[in-house]
Image 1: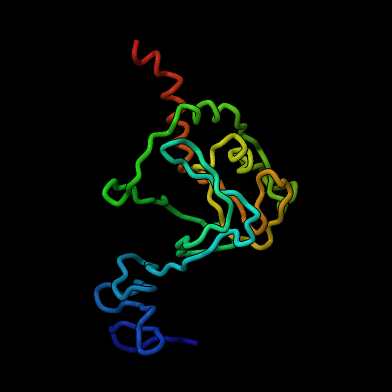
Image 2 (image 1 turned 30 degrees about the vertical axis):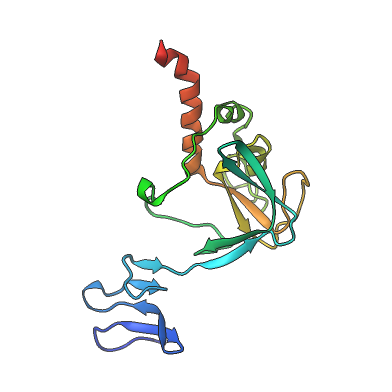
Length: 202
């Protein structure tokens, strides 16, 4: 089966006489856009859904404010989610996160306790429960270990109804934790800087 047109014009998808998906023709042919009629990339999603995480109030979220680390019970409402997946994401090249200061606010320095907390976290070799014994061991952290020592800064909280509480101290029903290793670089930088501060000033 083939869906498309025989001309070099845009292929549009929509409801109620409005376009919500598009495959461009012309000089930008092949670009797909969702929520935008001017996709800037090969696949451009401009749609988000306001999602409530932990509606049962069974988990705890951690936030770093000017007075230090604070916690808040769920639910966490109005979290804009653009893409959700139950599987892994594979990239053949790099993954980029916009880091321009002009689109950010509420800047706060990390406190020195972050460096001390990093020393309490252990790197581990492991396999996923779905792996058999022939799969090489992976390298990483337990997300729960990072939360326990007060380092939620690099944890992503993703709704997953198959996740159940195994440790009532840190687990949240229906929420899967994942470590964002790109953010770990900032924590490691803080650790190195703190450990070498005396050497640098002397």
